[in-house]
Length: 213
Image (cartoon, rainbow, N blue to C red; front, side, top):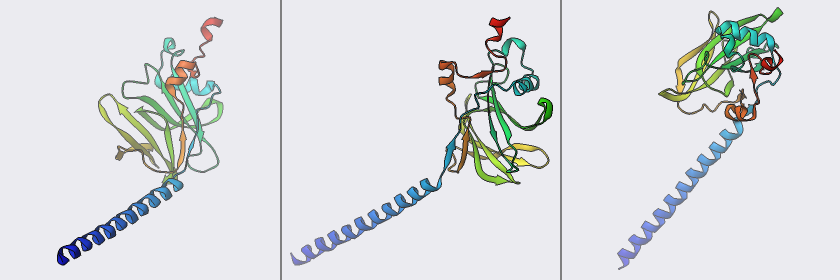
């Protein structure tokens, strides 16, 4: 009986020590995750709501959007300084029959010039919003992260990085299923479905043009 009692006591003490160690480990993981969350700072930014005729005209020409589609083709844009030179670039997403399919929409990274001229720094198709402008930089330009999904493709996130010779290009090896935990600005954060329901969006040709003609 004495031996049995001592064995049970030893087993109980072992379980208590194991339980305490497990709790300690869980606490350490929780604290670490909490610290990561505190260090993970993301600023949400909605699209500009002011019409930008020069940009709309450029998008029309760049994508060769038929005139009959212009009143139904939406565009969203934000300003962001991608290379920290004090001058904002433009990230523009165009949504319409010509620029979109079941995998997503078209996006351009633009540098604006004089007289409504734009330089294309990157062109992408089949992407979604919101777009993450990461604090991480490559070749002195911020990394851009796009959500991708739909059309039978694997859902996830893919990064675009800047190359001196070619501008922004997708890094196919950067694809991940879960959104990367990086700090930065999440731009074009508009709820596109809600915008349609509330009639709150810009179109390539203003929708009231038809009623004025």
